[in-house]
Image 1 (cartoon, rainbow, N blue to C red):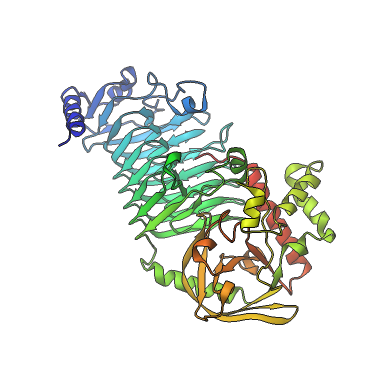
Image 2: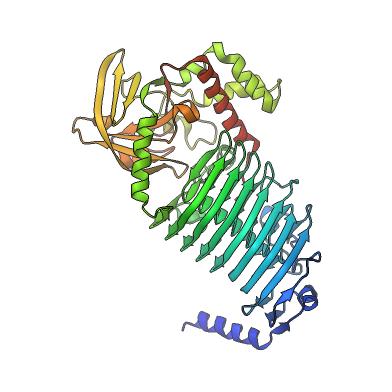
Length: 549
């Protein structure tokens, strides 16, 4: 045993020797009189549904952004709590304007666990959970939540949210060997909700199980079976979401069977590791989302990326966070068969001939449609400026190194080229055959087979297809997003000869390029619908300008 491990073991032994025994509700509540004590539970406790005051409270240690994340030691619970396998039941907290609510409100630099919480109901505004509202640099282990419910209420900081069954907000912590059966309900404009954890930053989750529901209003983000987010977490290992229903309203994004969004950056200087998901299972996880939903994945919805954050902060936030999936499975346990079937169905669903989308919908004939959608969000005065900005964002005519040279890191603005490249003006999808023409003359035609799922910068998930034809050149691979004319009124895809480059967002030979296709036989209604979709999706992101991890 190393010296550090020996010191930790010795400290744990001393803590147990000095532990204060708890056997009644009154004694449990009295922990607030000595927040640095070490406690052991010696009996089951029924809180009888009386309004509960959380053990430990959140108060910022200072005024800076960093100090806001660090709880004041004198207010938080800093002792230790060992439930010794006992059960605490019938917890009720009804504080719709309060922060950091739960059996424990705020814990810091400590460990709690080894107990069951049964029949718990918590109403809070921010950082709400049945067990721990806010866990800072702490470990929560061996906690089982049975019949839990957390209801969030809108307030000044609603856009950050953070609601979960076991932990609402976690910073630099560990959640391990916990199980939660709970219902999490959040209103419009809130975020970061999961059955085990809500908003988790630099907080790993190991050996945890989730069952229950997550129900969100409109304009929400970060929804997951196990956690709402896992920003800069090192690992999610041996976690499972089973029999979970996630229901989201309109304009919601980043929704995943295990977590809504996650990841970090490979460069160690940023101190935000790439998150590795290992042996995670999403079984019977059902996601139902309203209009304009985006970033939905079986395991992870997406990597964290927001245009406003990218422009304000530059690198590394100008790229989506990255994550890895290792031996993760969904529903049937046969992800390969599921993906193959979904990829084949996609090619059936997109059958038809397409031209580039944006030259059509940015024609002056549709100016009024753009203005109406923008005015509904930003008002009549700002609508022309916002509409023009949205059009300009996807009317770029350069990509690859030329765009990189022109835009730099993108912090001062960039345009995406959404045209067809490679000398084609129409592309036809006919089952496994994809072909392209220029002015009616054939340019390429190949049969393609599904290779694997693929992610564009950890932000957009799709399917990779490859042709065996040796002369395919820049049409060797097609990378298709799961969009169809029936679902989004248009297609988004890339093609090229370099698989790795196809996954890069603002670097490499395909930087700042993502083809957008529109059916040649589209009618007026479809044209107006796709303009509305584009406006609504992008204006929803503007309304949530800086999602918090």
